[in-house]
Amino acid sequence: MKKIVTVCGMGIGTSVLLKMNTEKALRALGLDGDWEVEAADIGTARGVARTADVVFTSADLVDEIGTVKAKVVVIRNFTSVAEVTERLQELV
Amino acid sequence: MELPLPDEAVRLRVPATDWRDAVRYAGAALTAAGITQAAYTEEMIATVEQLGPYIVIAPGIALAHSRPSPSVNHAGISWVTLATPVEFGNADNDPVSLVVGLAAVDHDGHIDLMAALAETLADEIRLPKALAATTPEALRAALAPTEEGQV
Image 1 (cartoon, helix red, strand yellow):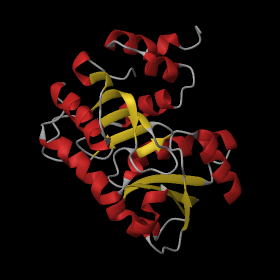
Image 2 (tube, rainbow over the protein chains, first blue to last red; image 1 turned 30 degrees about the vertical axis):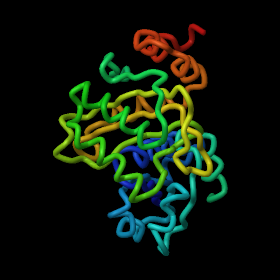
Image 3 (tube, rainbow over the protein chains, first blue to last red; image 1 turned 180 degrees about the vertical axis):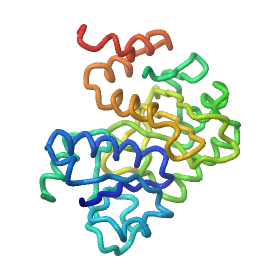
Image 4 (cartoon, rainbow over the protein chains, first blue to last red; image 1 turned 90 degrees about the horizontal axis):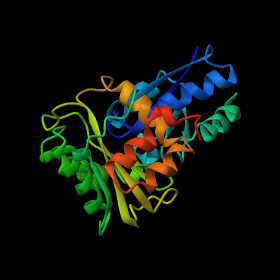
């Protein structure tokens, strides 16, 4: 099982929205058995990213996350399942 | 689930002058609806000042929020459309014409609300109708799940 962490500033809004759309995209791609998705706020993201393979976040927060082992992927439209699907297809 | 948007939580075509003003409208609506206390509004502004305009989550849409705090009474949203779009400084998604204010008391107690919101904001039929609404009644009618499939 591989892991994607969705990261936003506070962990209640943006990251939760992105987690839902990522799960939706994974189901549509038939990959939901291979990946788990977790939402995190920026304060805990660096810790969580240690156990993750991929981090999804916004362009504004990339610098805050800094250098982590996980691959950091920027999502521009957090409501777009289509964009998340494209980013996922690039990963697998 | 239907998005809970009583009249108090809705402000339509407000004359916001900049992003702080727009967030203040969203905060005032949250407070008017009993969701937050007034201090939460400045907490939402501080979030953007500290972490940047990442709250502009999609073209034209800002999800104004801060972290769970004593200023939050219970989870909920407000809905504010702007007479004139304003810039938040987000290169991808500016300018903003819809500000959704969000408050939560923890990280996962509002999952149903977020699921409904995610569905609404990605809905190419309901969202444009909702953005065109000039009264809270029209907004609720545009967002009603029963509208789906009837168009």
